[in-house]
Length: 284
Image (cartoon, rainbow, N blue to C red; front, side, top):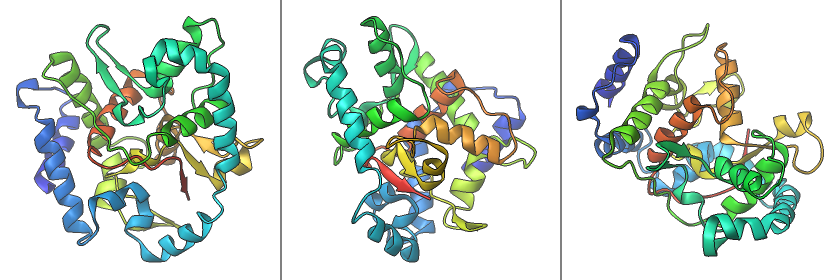
């Protein structure tokens, strides 16, 4: 795995040149898991759905106490109300499931458009097609709606496919490149914090393992609750978190649902294949 990380860093230094013939997502996933299994011996794969609470016993005790009365429940209820409001549209867009029980299959590569489709993107596209105003990408109503929809997939294993299509492989490589490339004034990559230093402490926070990261999004954070308003104020989407991470390393964030973040989500989610959805999560 160390060689793998070094190789990805080198890839970044070479300006992102991609050799698709060498792309092997299945091997990447095997090495990614093996690294964390060695770093946190004895931690079962499914525990990574719990983030730092799956690998840090003292923080787990605090989290279990919080989960006795989850602070996100009113927000999930608000998300369900929004779902019921738009359910007739969702039946047209998502078929018989009407958007329930589908979180584990997003994001996916759409062979017709050549694009990566995120769940948030699919929802707003559906709303626009049916004459509704799209919802804000990073927080509030859309985050609460996705939190509810994701909760209907709890217990279903993440199952992202990277087909043998040069366009899909290019998206995957772009996301992998972003994950391992250093950026910002602090010159840090996603991997520096959430692979190399996973489980370590930065100020008062514990750095979470990248394995399983996406399984509990959208997440509810006290930090966001203090900044927000109403019962949905504490929620944030995965792309909101990406932007926050970029700011923390003093790099300019990309826009939510940008190609850069869609590619990152595609790679990032693939790396959690097999881990069961556990959403929404409460995080520090």
